[in-house]
Image (cartoon, rainbow, N blue to C red; front, side, top):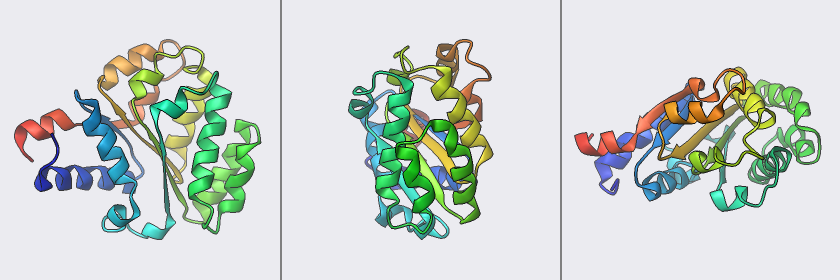
Length: 199
């Protein structure tokens, strides 16, 4: 398990370096709890404030798999995403751009994310157990995958970190014919390999 200080510090450094550079990150682990616990740690202000530049501009929002289970279609999930991000960003000067997305059509997010980027805002969305989400055909649609890929690759204000016990190649296979694979835009960090080499 990633309970040794050196192991956890090494992983945190890797993750924060990637997201500070505008990259999306996939945490791959055979033991689900390793990645889930790490996601929760990454989003704690007392932790990320030690690693990220201008830490006050960052907002992290964690979506547990149990929350996703309440969604019946991709539109429901988008509303959950925006509500979760808005709840964490309420003290930010750019909150007024984000709050309307909780009730507006998802397509309205383009301009909001551009305006947030102009104000140096940083939104990081955590998905726990992305491989479970990929098995829900009513949610795993182009209406979800298209915007996720577009916005997380185009806007410095929006990045994704997720956990999975399946490799990116398998998640790309599960995406099927829904356009260019979302996960081509991700850096994979294998927690199992880091543990075995005792980074």
